[in-house]
Length: 113
Length: 112
Figure 1: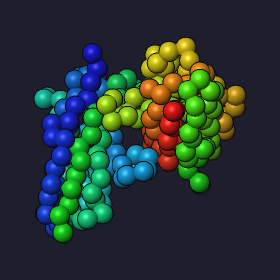
Figure 2: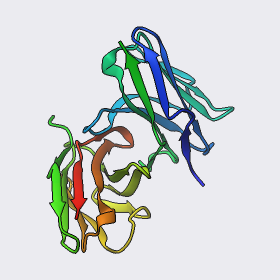
Figure 3: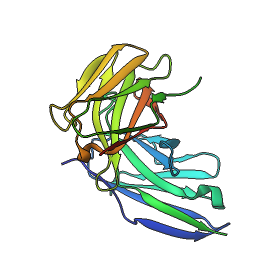
Figure 4: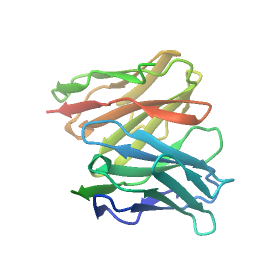
């Protein structure tokens, strides 16, 4: 069935280092992917998205890479800060314009000062 | 824009009682989603609407759960009767034409 999974449940990094959070997806028909950040007690917050016709997209301090060949998605955070500590989810839209997002299980990012 | 607004933020109820969760999506958004989040199952899509019409309710756990969207600015998720296993955080999200999914702050439901 459709599934989105994260490789690492917890990632611990030193402040100032770069972070890489990985995600594997199983549905080759998925054409839209989103990374969310969720802080304790809050709803998921949109970070960055990418469509399947791209393999890289950059935002402010964040980069998303998409490898459709191996169905892999990653989120890179440059110069990680304590405020980046949160749970990160990848989500995929399994069919264009249906609006149906499937979420992975999440990775906890811990930033050590 | 105030974003997606959910109420109440917290709800504690006794088993067997009816619970109604409310959501106001972002103005102009044509999709509305209800998700449930638990430690065991993560974020699960319960149901979503497009232009106020339910499109996919395959994630609704059972008949005790129902959702309505009477107009473009309001939706409810009702549980009747509630059970302890329904305890979770329920999120509403909205998007425009499948883009820019925005979540509300959630309703933390505790059924005792």
